[in-house]
Length: 82
View 1 (tube, helix red, strand yellow):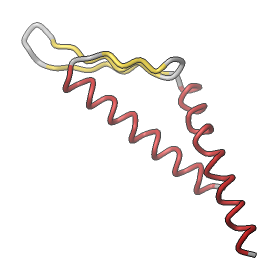
View 2 (cartoon, helix red, strand yellow; view 1 turned 90 degrees about the vertical axis):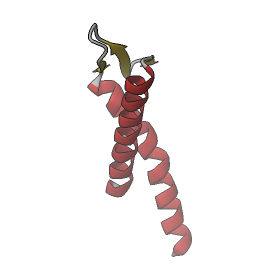
View 3 (cartoon, helix red, strand yellow; view 1 turned 120 degrees about the vertical axis):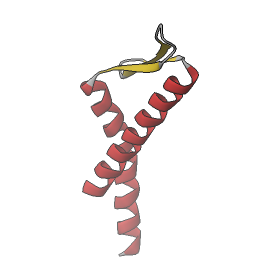
View 4 (cartoon, rainbow, N blue to C red; view 1 turned 180 degrees about the vertical axis):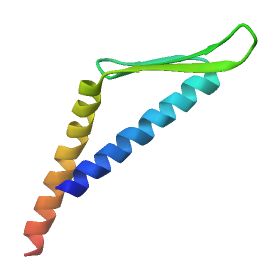
């Protein structure tokens, strides 16, 4: 159960980093409702920048949404083994 929670935290963090990199490189805005907004932009000097505005509650919701199926599969797999 702890492993599924840790895996879902890792997957969420990797996805957030990928969205940040994409918004930075392509100068686009990515909005995930109730979770985060990744805004890539170019300053006056031509330097690329990115701003991230997020919600801890939304991120926790995503982590739990990913952790529940992983935990369910782990418990079902363990029961079928016995």
